[in-house]
Length: 233
Image 1 (cartoon, rainbow, N blue to C red):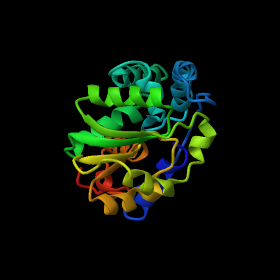
Image 2: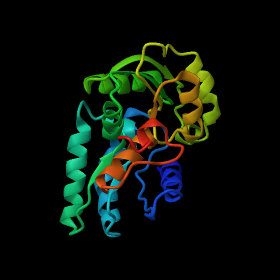
Image 3: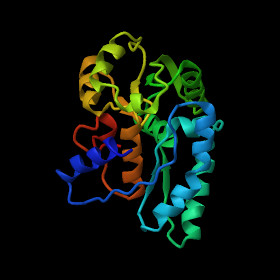
């Protein structure tokens, strides 16, 4: 949230007149486990309230797996509850969740089936896959990198991703989710994997940026953001 989304918005500033400021409030998490994710989500109201003091125009809840670990469709309930928190502070703002944005972004490009890369341990990855499937999107193949430490997730080299995708079954999918986690870097590899596979590539960060731009009623062309941020969707 604090690296690739600002990078995408800065790239957009090269081709569009709008300028952005970026504000963050943190929910604590060190290890990507169900118990820490639940505690993290419980802290989201505080974060929304703090950020609403800045009168921001849109908020992004960046932890995809924290939302998905709370049950099918939870991104709807979370976004509405957090929006109500901002309204209660006389600073109403739309709230985008990376979980909801990913599903919406996949549907926007017309993809019915995807291959997914996650940094999570296998049980959490299977939960993410089930959540995506519950959104009406088939997950034909997936890889769990099984990195439990949150800082190690952030330190994963995005240039490992093209080789990881090369070992997956992508022939029959409509799109590739290169990182189902805003924390795991992937932006540098988006265009490479699109060229490598001939498939649209979506990431949690790309989808969140796309959804934020939609909420701001702004054009969605961002250089380097792949198919979803080509401006066509």
